Image 1 (cartoon, one colour):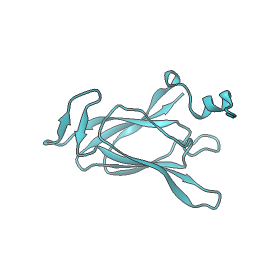
Image 2: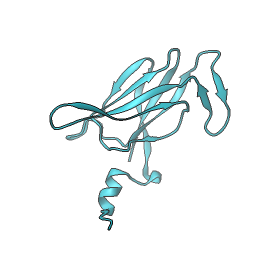
Image 3: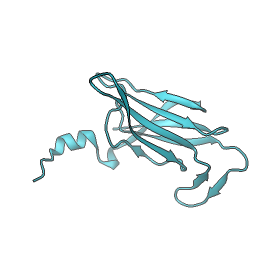
Length: 129
């Protein structure tokens, strides 16, 4: 028997058509931790997306929808903090495309960490409602 609560489900995972992007100011290279504090939450967003600003010469591109880049553009993971103060990586991914919406499986992480491939610079956006 399902005990889904529609309002709670909409809050934790809103409809795709309700999502918008909010620019994280700056152009990023290397490693970064992102937070978007709001109320009791360290990251009050539903996900992250990015656009390529610069790409090194010689990278392989497989054209399609979306284009795929080789090697990967970035690795990213969400960090949640348990009641005992222990940080845990709740999910991680290698990303080879830009412009996709990475919506977190476990909402409201403590922080989001990205490792951008050498020579790549990216603009990041929070996915919010």
